[in-house]
Image (cartoon, rainbow, N blue to C red; front, side, top):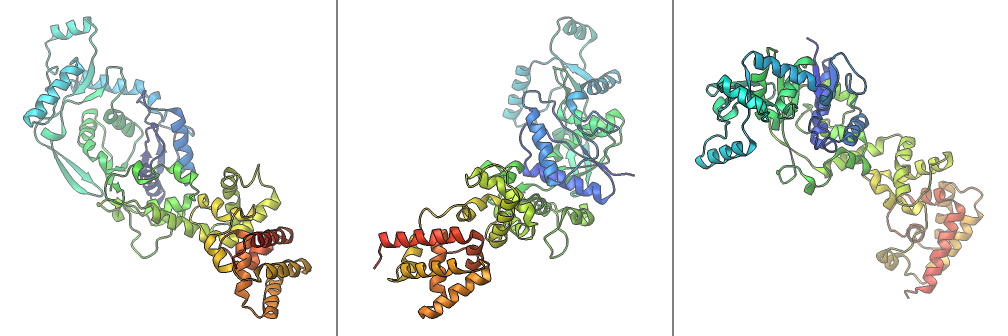
Length: 491
């Protein structure tokens, strides 16, 4: 049997991290088993489905590296792959059930159904449809048809017994039919299918062998198994993935921070870091290693290492992962990825040329260990693009307070100006020789210079920093600091 799995998002919003985890597990399972990964767009909710969200979801999946073998843009043998283009198929299958006596038309007004639900809730009974339209006499059916009353299609469901779901992760799960079933709707009055019906028809027609989806869909499975039986299709194997919770173990929501993949892209996360972190939410590699490429994950992934218990989504942990990947990433790639963040912050304009890219590469090489996301880069690296507008107050007290510091910075400027080469080694030699002549620790000059050229007290190695800024810019910043010290004496 060739494994065929699908990811079937509804384009009613951005790709949520939970949906991304589901897509990832399906992709990994398909790749590990040498199977097929299918993208299906479930867009029959006409009021909420938006084409822009469909495009965004597909773009985010590509960004994560989760390419699909069949889908709305690449086609395939079982298309179309948008539910809105498959409506005739759903109606055909519903008609088949009607002819076989396994479904019937229901004309109950929504307000009557709501009163039924409220009364059942008041009495503490399951909120089941009463089945009042199941056995309408032929003459009554004809009358309602003549009057053109709105109608839906319901299936005839068992009221007794139980339905057993053999889940690949949770084992055997039993549902009493009295609670899990009623004569549920499969076609709405507008002729569009309900979720459960469209899902079953599509999975059957697309020959899906395994359904890996979120735990919240487990309660849908009894109804779907009934539909497979009524339609005469073999059901797929089901695997319901553990929930993803917020750090306070509540349902993950916007109040806990970013929850959409797009937001993490915009914050400067790398796709490989997001994928790696999401893979560990509910799945264990079975060892101490935590860092895996997508290719490595596809080799070691298996459903028997997916747990049942909920996982806690920790943005700080994912940022830590991202920092690790930033330190290992190709510098040219990072420079290209970082440029839009610098441009958005007003530090650069337009697109980078080769010289500017090399400059950003070197800048990142010096300081990328101190950032966790590219979104943090503009603030951290701002002094590489423009001189500081102010100096850290605590740094001023510690490093600009010596009576001779202004004079020493001037002497440093003269030494740097006279260097035949402005490489880090030459810059360091100038600092250490002047410090020896003055009889002061080199750190005194180093800390004062760092404050003068960056406005801060911490950062990359000073000699490489000064060398990268270039002779002209470094001398200009030293002179600006000298002038500031003259106008703001601390002694």
